[in-house]
Amino acid sequence: MIPDYFRSKMKAMYGESGVVWADQAELIILSLKEKFNLTFGDPFSLSYNFVVPVILPGDTSAVLKMGYPNKDFSNEFHALVEFAGDAMVKVIDSDREAGWILLAHLEPGTGLHSIGDEDARLKIFASVARQLWHKPSALHTFPDVKAWSEGIQRYRSRFHDANGPLPEKMIAKAESLFVHLLSSSNEQYLLHGDLHHENILYSASSGWNAIDPKGLVGEREYDCIQYTLNHWKQHEDPYELLKHRTSALSSLLSLSYERLIAYGFCHSVLSACWCVEDGSDCWENGAAIAEMYEKLIKENKAGSPL
Image (cartoon, rainbow, N blue to C red; front, side):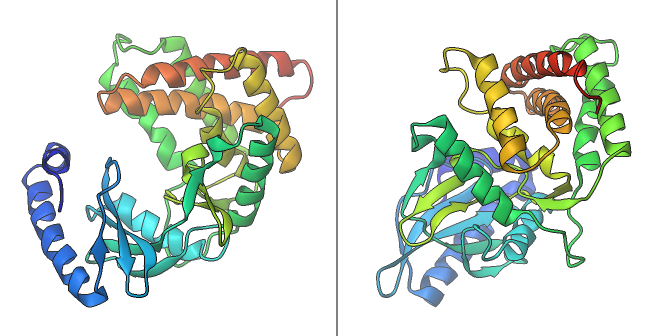
């Protein structure tokens, strides 16, 4: 059931414990097949989790998701529980210790990017985000934006002689701006953490729903940034698109425009650092967006301070 390429990826990421997990996952899949009388489809394109469509008795469509037992999977598990009923995909059953979640299958499951009009997409995004965001409970300790920001310090430690792919000036500014934003932060909310076009899907029965929450505590402005990192290269004027997106989101969601664009710069740099850490060339995307955010900040600077 688990493809060889995914097994290899687990081994590359977690060593022999990844191999053991994949073997155990196969046994869990067999037990779940018997327990729920499941019929399996072909696995989805796999990244860090094993995800496969299934059919329950009565021809009910569902999705089985299994993840290596680490903090990321635990955070997602708890985020799904906390966001339950708030524009989030429904959890049918789960077992955190065994590492599996049975989710409702959002059909047709069309992604937000399928909507052709940018303003319509922004309104849908805002509606979903507004339903999701709420004060975090004390049931689980989610990571916060400060913890995420440490990815920049890890990058600096690795390239302490400033010989990394990202400009030193960009890294230094992100560090400084993060310190300012975090020291002056306002109300903290439980955020999705990865709210972009492909993680907002349409269901004929329940409308637009989010999937794959990271679970992050921070200011609401921070949860808008991942959307802006996606689907911009094909636009005839990416900078104007970013300007429109940030302005519209701050208006639709009653957010601080100044803090939104400042977080936008910081998270774009952080995203680039993560890509370098993972050995991926996707850092170029984050760096390019960071440069546009920096331009927005300079244009806005004469208006009102952070």
